[in-house]
Amino acid sequence: MKPVLEIANLSVGFPDGTAAVRGVSLRVMPGETHCVVGESGCGKSVTALSVMNLLPRGASRSASVMRFQDHDLTRMADRHIARLRGDKMAMIFQEPMTSLNPAYTIGSQMAEVLERHRHVSRAKGLDRAAELLEKVGITAPGMRLAQYPHQLSGGLRQRVMIAMALMCDPELLIADEPTTALDVTVQAQILRLLKSLQQQLGLALLLITHDLGVVARMAQRVSVMYAGQVVESATAEALFAAPAHPYTQGLLRCVPIPGKTPHDEPLGSIPGVVPRIGGRFTGCAFRDRCAHAAPACEGDIPTRHLSHDHETICTRPPA
Amino acid sequence: MNPRSVSTGLGLLIVGGVLAIALGADLLAPHDPFAQDLSQRMIPPSWMDGGSPDHLLGTDQLGRDYLSRLIFGARISLLIGTLTVVTSGLIGTTLGVVGGYFGGRADDAVMFAITCRLAIPLILVALTVVALIGSSLTVVVLTLGLLLWERFAVVARTTTMQIRNLDYVAAARAAGASTPHILIREILPNILTHLVVVGTLEMALAILLEAALSFLGLGVPPPLPSWGLMIAEGKDYMFFSPWVIMVPGVALFILVFGINLLGDGLRDLLGVSARR
Image (cartoon, rainbow over all chains, first blue to last red; front, side, top):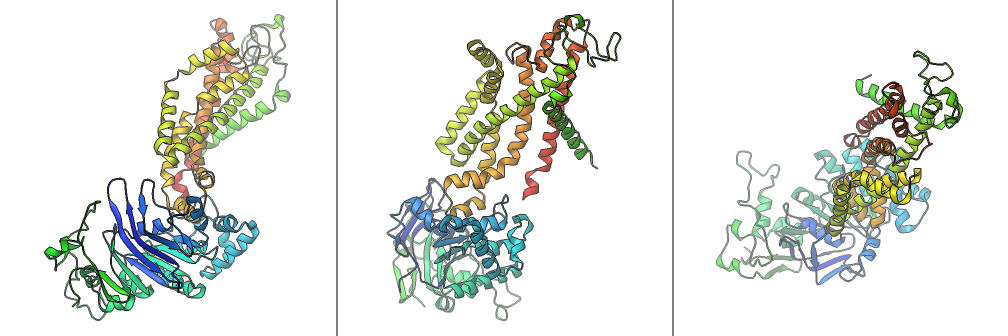
């Protein structure tokens, strides 16, 4: 099967010399949820934005492969990529409170997407919007369509954002921390919704998150990012069962497991902070925080294949 | 009712009243504002000694009915205020939004234009223009309109810079919107409230500037009944007949005061905090 999205050796740099993304490769298969997980500033959002061609001005992007369906994104003109955005690939942002324009009604903003890409009438756009609002579990969609964003709660707005992303039946949905700004019960609802929509529509979902709980309930595949690199990539089961990279292991130790984690001991933590990575950095970016650091970690780190779909970049042989 | 809404209401009342007077000038004015009657010169207002009930606010040095001239003068003031704000608003908003959204070179160019504009002395330019082209209503409107855009540009630029980084602009781009679409449909409606407030301030300023230019003889030409011109024509007589400058002066004060009250009220009413 051909992947919906394939990226190889993606690098993104910013004018201040920061190398935000360094040689990231990932593939998203049709109907699959691929989670990109990592802490703030590890380059996961920048990866998502560079797929959509929405990087801030001044950012430089290079990749050996960047393919969406049959479109070679590395060679496409900006305005052609703009035509794909919101149509075949859609994106949901982190902040539902500010992602909707306060000056227009929900219906007007949703219908506009369909008008733009499908050149249909406003009435048809509103029909489709109402249908999708119902699909994302909003009752009385007719009333919501006429409302302004400030009349909606955060959870409702995120549902609207999801419905809006689905207006043109996208093949790929990129969700950049879609639940971070919501409270816990609403988070669970939104995740359940995303999962059921994905199964109904056969969407490929690229889910960006820093929450391993989200990864556990959503992902088929996981890419763990650290300081601009994918340090480990595996199926969700393999990753949770046998994490290979010390960073992944450290992350998993930070998550409490009901029934297993003892109450009287502090949770695990990873000492140190994420280093700032410039252009000429070599070796493992995690070595300053790693318990297993060795002189070999300062050289080039080869990619180690643990099985056909589990790989990591670490000098240490698997236990 | 809180004092805020009282003052807004008062502003609305004043501006609405002046607007109604200006629109209904033909019906309201008791006399022809241009008709001279040299036998009826310098009659004081009707409540003063020697006043006549036929001329409620008296007559000027050419025997023209002062009330009628005042009523027609409202027309000139509002016309100049509105047209100036529309012209300068268009120029300033376009420059400000372009500079604020695109940043970089475009922004440098806009900032340079604003700085240049601030360095231009308004009255001197008006003087030159009038000397070259001659004075007329159109010249005054164009001169003011082409010169008073800098506050629109500054406000449009800053507010655009704040909004261009908001998620809904990114979301619109993620949904495939083009740049003109983002500028006109996403950004403009959200900075409009700020621009309306600037618009009221600029309108008050334009009306005062017109009066000042007319007073200097650089504004609307006689015999048009501009309030500034009325003050200018009356200044020779103000020692013995102070009302010839007080009447148009008070009218100017009330209108500008009303516009400012309305502007303050609009700012509170349309405050950004209320829209979030």
